[in-house]
Length: 501
View 1 (tube, one colour):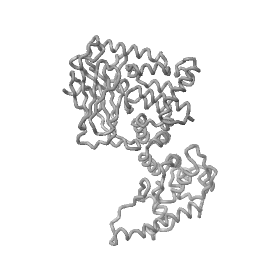
View 2 (cartoon, helix red, strand yellow; view 1 turned 60 degrees about the vertical axis):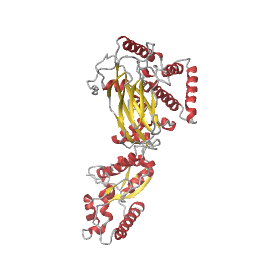
View 3 (tube, helix red, strand yellow; view 1 turned 135 degrees about the horizontal axis):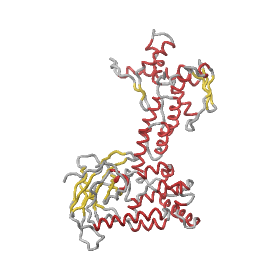
View 4 (tube, one colour; view 1 turned 60 degrees about the horizontal axis):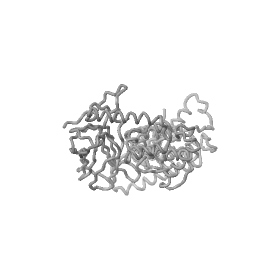
């Protein structure tokens, strides 16, 4: 069976097993080793303190460290007493079967009917391009020493090598390092590596980091690294932390598409959007006015742009003009959306709908309006999001660590203005997130999906943060559904319940 890399440690502490035999007898003791690895250091079994205190232990620890270092240098670096040679990536290592068998890959190779079992020289082919000579050298060397330091910039190469050699504890060490070092520079590399090597928890962490930071950081280097499939997944999610409104998602997509097509672009962050607009204008001229997504270059991006919630873009006049002028999106996509929004408006006006009655989670996840904002400091503030919301004028207020929704119902003569119905309903979810300098969440609060009912000029406290540690800037993301879509197909039975009162 496979032997853990930790099980070799008694080899470095021969004095413990004095009288237990020579090397062969010591090797048999590997199964009972109690030592554990942390990220960078070894944690030994807890011992009772000696009369001399902690300082009395230092010489012994130093002797153990020196013995470990001498074993590494003599057996691994110089290859003394080697009984097998490993060849890979144009290099040779003179090693020892008893050490190599700590890796599941070699344990299987040297036991059974494999032809390498009795060979003195084994050549290994590396099918994974993430494995390089340096990583292989470090991982093979880890079999001869107590612990291994892994810089974050090398963790993917080490992970790839440890996965191939089936070193579970080294894989776990890589996992812990990745959890602690997710950032704009590493997140995409970690995400793709987690998919390749089956680290589902790392994939989930990276995905959440991207949902929190894709639009808050506005990082062009990050946009370059996001693949088409990953961007499609992010844009489709209702958990995307949107700054302002849905139109800003479209703008982000436009910049991302430009960077995917022009990976050699170099410029300032301020110049990115104007350069993208200029490039798309030239492309439109060369394509005789054809919408970008209907051209040969644009077809690959259709699955991503299909995740936009166009109904919440065309409800704002300036945004609708930009969509029309850019001509990225075909008219065949937009016409049904305009028709649907117009019919929804007519239903709201003629039937005097007060809002959603039976709203399903699938409605909110796939069809809700995504919007957000930022509280830079702990001070009173109120705001509303632009766009026509079927007569709803919903104002969000922050004051004294409380977030309140207020329905404004100023009397207007225009039929398309603010609704004067005595009561209106809205389905919503409110999320609050604080991020550290590396984009990792240090505070998170989620109301889950709820139904809110407000009378004219009524307000309701949604979140109270008075007794919580809140860090600023504080990002706020909202999902709203004012008028549910007509149900032409069967929907999920998991519906949002209206809160009492």
